[in-house]
Length: 178
View 1 (cartoon, rainbow, N blue to C red):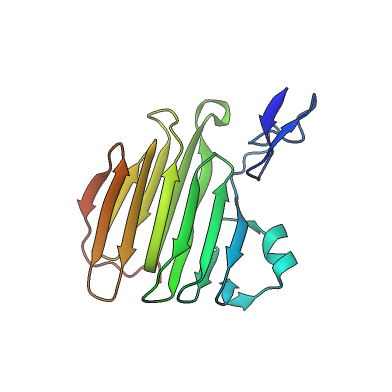
View 2: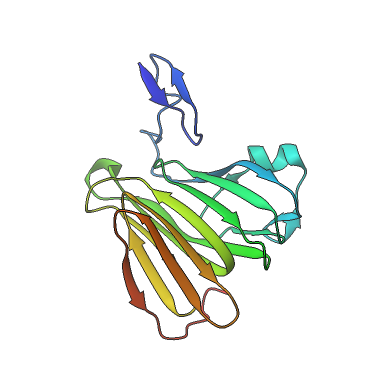
């Protein structure tokens, strides 16, 4: 069987369950840094070595920050991918919610707070019951099966849709995630 590995972007051939894109025995959804270049990278305000970063499992409430011109590729175990990058400022996100929901863990809920900077995302096309949302202080983008870019600077948020569609909502200024 050719399957996507658990918590990684690679495809592997295996007759077992070790490399499933989800863990069938535990209810958990996580993210991993698949690569990064340039700049300083912090996870939970700690600078990690290159090896530590690539082996680190990211969970709910983890924060990731990369300095200006640095690029970080983030892989979610539901198959979604994000790139944290900005040429004008540092970029920082908080993984607010990452969990499997309902029906034997077939549906996922991922919510990310973009504190500042830019986040390109390709959200996997899954069931309508799955959610992928990115929040800023003044906007919310809810997507599935979509490629989009969201940028937050000190004054406002900008959203660009490259493929499919994004549901956008204005947020009242909220600072509860940073």
